[in-house]
Length: 288
Image 1 (cartoon, rainbow, N blue to C red):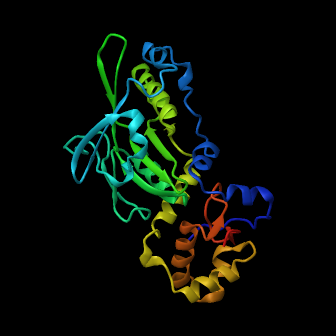
Image 2: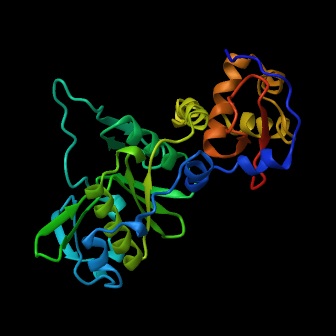
Image 3: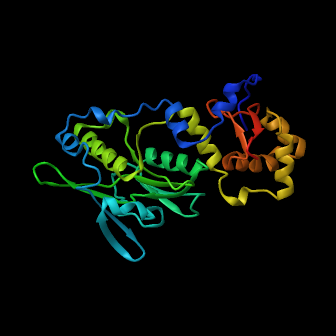
């Protein structure tokens, strides 16, 4: 089922890498943040220090379409809305749109590329995220020549402390000057509104492969009984090899789906910077 790997010694780094928040994945996974502040675009210069003035936000929900000044948008539950635009699919299309089922929301989240799908998955994997919507809003502004500009970020995520995060996904070597200018102005608007903002590219392939594997067990149907879950938490109370320890409770084919579900849910942890193998060390999350 897994390729075998040499036995690993436990280190503090193993516990640190076991963190699974979104920024840990995009920053520790080789992601280099785009330096939006260095954009020389007149769009950026024109909006420096403007606050929320000059920006408007549009969004959709079950009651229709809405638009308001950015200063009034902090109270909007964008994560409970509808995408502001569709996800076209046609013959010969170069990108790969689709729907990702989110364990966080219990519904589908749209994506327009494998990169967007991966970041939807990482946000879904982040336990502090309580809401997620793709193409959540339009941000409107005018440049210094009076031309209307709009931008729809790829995702809005809501965190359990109430924070909002807007995310744009783009391979960083494909961010041209025009896109960088839009991203820079979007960052200024987010800072004024009190939201976080990330422009994200490819994630470390090992980490992403591990999260994709665990995502296969994200659905509640892979959750085991409360009794079995407690037994699994007990046998992994100290860092132990994945398959060897799971086999103490029965046939690994039957037990491992529950282990993977607990890893997805954050009740168990592992060092996802290394490929998951049958000897990967797994331990009970300290918070449980």
